Amino acid sequence: MRTEIENVVDEIQQGMSLLRRHLDWDTAQVRLAELNAAAEDPELWNSPDRAQKVMRERQTLADQVEAVQRLEQDLSDQIELIELAEAEDDLTVAVEAEAALRALKSEVERREVETMLSGEADGNDTYIEIHAGAGGTESQDWAEMLMRMYIRWAERKGYKTEILEYHGGEEAGIKSVTLMFKGPNAYGWLKTESGVHRLVRISPFDSNARRHTSFASAWVYPVVDDSIDIDINESDVRVDTYRASGAGGQHINTTDSAVRLTHEPSGIVVQCQNERSQHKNRATAWGMLRARLYEAELERREAEANAEAASKTDIGWGHQIRSYVLQPYQLVKDLRTGVESTSPKDVLDGALDPFMEASLAQRVGGEPKAAVEDLE
Image (cartoon, rainbow, N blue to C red):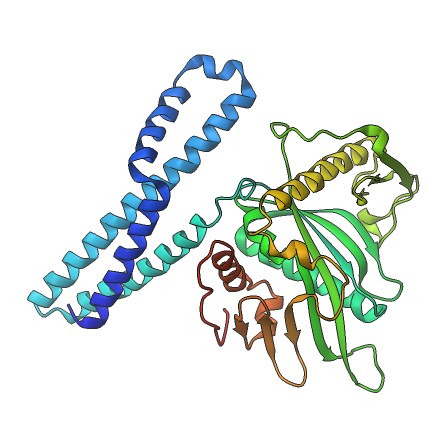
């Protein structure tokens, strides 16, 4: 094989070794056998909660083991195909096999990134709160652009999204919004987005077409299930109800159905207004509060990995994690990892994975990937 292809094969083999080490291959095989045996036990379903936990772990581990086995087989098949093509001087087959190897390399790299999503709550669904910074209509419009960016990213991932709380701006945009993202590793991916986002552009609201700088924040915390015990003293929580408001449609209501919970010891505030029933909004808000308190506990236990905790201060200069420059040039730059894109349009349309991957690598002690010129 030519040197270039040999290098690709070497990189794939190194990636496969990393995947095996991460899985702790021998232990994973034993654990999968145990889970398969548990799944076949009829008594398992006497406890639905335990059964769901077992089946979820089994499916996840089986997917990981089968993926490694398939990738190794694919690599072996393509190497044999290239050697056969070279022996028979069949250029067409060789080119197709080389293209398959490069695609295989990309998949192995993607699997390597997924191994970084192994935190305690990384596999959970997640909430994301977006708040406009100072600056009125400019920042409120930017906050709405961020909301759209994350919704488009979720669509690319095949995640479901739900708006739990929505406060529209006076003229345009939003003051704040709380979204729920449902899908595999939703929190693991989105936790890298917590922080302040800065936009530089020619303002569409300025009749003199001047350049403006706007800020908005995104805070991310995981959805927690009943198996995670979060002790909340109800006397520490102030409950307020109010009339839902927003852009109209499902965001507006005629009764005081919206619920706001304030956890006074921590100062954490959560709100929910997506249901017409106050009872349902109250239940959702309590779930959000448990999730926020759980996230706070994760931050205390994982302070070194969660550098964004120190940045949760003012929504303004000196605290941003990423800059989006539309004028006088086109550039999105992550200030933590150095990853760049010269296509802000693609980034604002949801092309966020390279930024997230670099941030994840940095969190687990790896080096972020080199800056990229264009993110598709």
